[in-house]
Image (cartoon, rainbow over all chains, first blue to last red):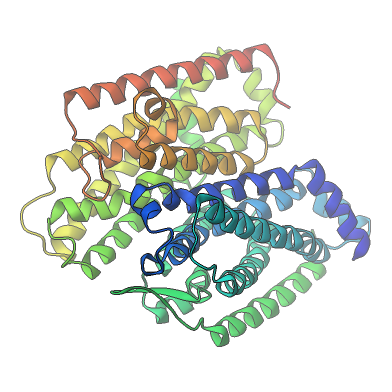
Length: 250
Length: 250
């Protein structure tokens, strides 16, 4: 596994995966911070009743739900597509790395990269808020809690996208599903919770520790029970399917 | 003409039409749900409903859909020995690219017609709105086809140069961020007309009630959009043809 991972790191380096990731993180940060630009928002930076951090946070939640499915689909597709293009499945299998192992190694390499991306994006948005002049105390716990939840959902979707990209050679399918996910993600915040729990992208809304009500933004308890069940389900699915890949011909 | 037919034959087998139908359908479903849930706040009937449909579609999903379609259209040329076959075709680079652009533009036409049809059906049958879709919404949707031409040309250029399926899509997302930034920061003038994705967002939001300072759809704004779209498309088309005729893409 370690050898397979080191090979994946080399592939990722030549595929400039970090650059792709940086582009996407820049996009999320820029879109999330757009709310800081308006004059009406600026006036409320020192007023707790105007909920400046909450407003920035919800903007981040919405943009993350919209762009994370795309980021995950892009990363998975880029890392898996080379195997299809260069007959890498067959080559690796001959060298003793069956397709399932290759998929697990890809997730193991892209996962930490996603963790760094989420951490950097959260830090940059909070820093932008501070630099823009929000003087209300920062609810750091909410941001950390959400960042962890976001990463877990990203990792689960990464597993599913790697399997999809490996199984279906036409990457249009994976990217199309990612785009569909982006749609579902952004509207999962408006969906009834029961529907959000059924869709994999609905979990972007379920992990949010804040919600919208008539009186503004209110803290809510994220559905951690549902999230845990979803993660276990994805882990079992990924394990089973990737082991099946190991026993089939590349 | 023969080359365009050849391109359409290639696209017919690549399941791209699913993209052209599903994306507008999702925009209409989410717009309908959003309008239905906030009927008290959104009181101006068809105009509000239309604005809810196109707000995210214009900002992100239409441009991203085009990015995915352009990647798919060029992917087949990068596979196997197709690139050599394409380069050995007795046709100028300008004509090869023209055929790609026309076939992709036809997909965008289908996308917009599906959008209009679904909007009217859903507005009449699901929401039971009185009257018909205002003419300015129809005009904005059709203007969107012209405004999308620079995005088609840009994504086609990127997908031609980059062999990976996902990388041009990621760059397209960055373009959408720039577009949204230009639209919401109120920077008008040349920049709003030169950034391809901004042109799509701008033309679809003309006459919208969800974007402040969206502007009305009148002869001067329309001609500005059309002029900008045609000029940017021609520049990108010429650039792509020059690149293709001067060197090989490997």
